[in-house]
Every structure is written in C-alpha cells, then in structure tokens.
Amino acid sequence: MKSEYVKHKIANLISINKIVTIHYYEFGRDFSFGGEVHDFWEMVYVDRGRVHITADNRCITLEQGEVAFHKPNEFHTISTDSDIAADVFVISFVCSSSAMSFFKRRVAKVPKKLRENISSIITESAATFNLMPITGVELELKDDAPVGGQQLIRIHLEEFLIMLLRAESKDDTKLFPTKESMENHLVSRVKTILEKNIYRRITVDEICRELNYSRAYLAKIFKNSTGETILAHLLSLKIKAAKRLIREDSLNFTQISDKLAFDNPHYFSRVFKRITNFTPSQYKNSVL
Image 1: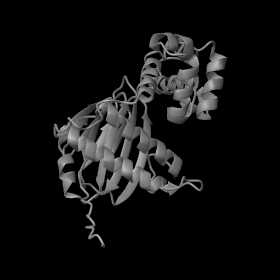
Image 2 (image 1 turned 135 degrees about the vertical axis):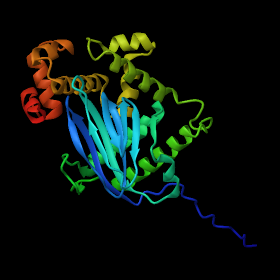
Image 3 (image 1 turned 180 degrees about the vertical axis):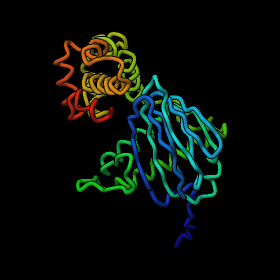
Image 4 (image 1 turned 135 degrees about the horizontal axis):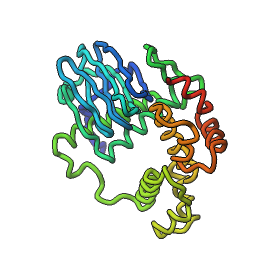
C-alpha cells in the first residue's frame, strides 16, 4: 500500500536575500566616521573596546559584547573615545522578512554562547571574501573561496538573528542544550584562562594543573577544536592586544613587549610579523 506523505513547507522566520558589506574594523583612538544612509540593514557588534553611534536622532554608546542594528534608510555614524581603541564587526544585508521589525532601534548584550555565531561569520567571511577597506563598496570573492562559504555566512547570520530574537524575547529556556560536551566545555575554559593571562607568562602545564587534565589530552582536544595549539592561540591573543595598544599610541614597542610578557622586543617583533605580516612599525604607520 502506498503511503500518502505530506510534504511540509518550511516556514522561514528570517531570510537574508543578499549580503552587502562585511568589515572587521580595528579603530584607533579618536576615530570618527561622518555617517551614511542606505536602503539595507546594518549590524554593528563591538568585539573589544567601546564605540559611540548615532541612529537618526539617537546617540548610543556600545560597550564590548553589545550589538546594535540600523534599519534601512536610517542615518548613522560611528566614533571612538580619545582614550581607547575598538575592534568592531559590521555586516550589512538585505532582508525583507517581517520579523526584522523586531530589530528596529534594537541594542542588545549578546549572550556569550551567541558570540560563537559572530566568530563563525567572521571566520567564514575572511575565508570567502577579500574583506574591504573602509571605503570599499563591493564584496570581492576570493579565487580559492571554500565551497559553500557564501551560503554558510548567510546561515550563520540568520541563526544569530533568530537566536538573538529568542533571547531578547525572554524565550530562552530552551535556547541551548542543558549539557555541553566535555570537550567543548574544556576548550572554552582554556580560552578563558588564556584571555585572562595575556599580560603574563603562562605555560600549558599551569593550565593543565588548574583544570586537572593531562597536557596531551588538553593539547589534542584544543587542536581538534580550534585548528591551532594552545600556545599559538595565546600568541594570537597577545598580538591582538598588541595591535590595540599600538593603535592607542600611549606605549612604545619595548613597553608593549614588556606589558605582554614577551622575552624581549626582538622576539615580540618576530612574532608580530609572523602573525600579521607587518612589523610593529609598519602596522603603526598603517593605522596612525
């Protein structure tokens, strides 16, 4: 007997039609962008530091971990303080879904778990497109872009918007599983320890003792999860902090090297060049 199956049509709450721009800005102190207006949505997320934005007639301060949305045809500006640099992720997109009305005038603290979605968007975007300077207006696809990269960017963004809508609607009791896998939890704890210790010397053995796991086990799960070693991740965090300190322009390179607990300025310079493809001086000249 032939079964009569019903093909259920999937309801789409939020559908992104087009991605317009993707930026990860490393703003220095006293940066100011005079403003613009366009007929598509824009999302602004502060990864580090603090920025000030205007949205029509509103003035808003966004702290680290906060996100704001500019609706289509809304005039907006962005600037930084005189004493702190900022790292800001901005993505603009076309979306006509009615659910997007929820994000009009929306400013929110992004739940820690949802920041992984933003990281996924940034990672996939960097692999897929030649990300633009601040004056760029058209995304340029890389010759070696990974298969499905553009679609994954859209999927990650749609998921982020839906999950943020849930969280902001206080319907977050079933937002995430009640139990994380042990390995993901441990990797997250290792990252937290590294982030708290970028201004001192810390060894993998210290982390192992704190978490009470063997060096081989932690090294294996961290490499499998992130694609890099624990020490490589720590150096990346230190160089990211170094770039921020250079943009703030209050310490010289030797002081920055000491502050970040490098063995000496020459080693700091070599690591900086290896990770960024710039010497500290070249990077400073490019941003200041």
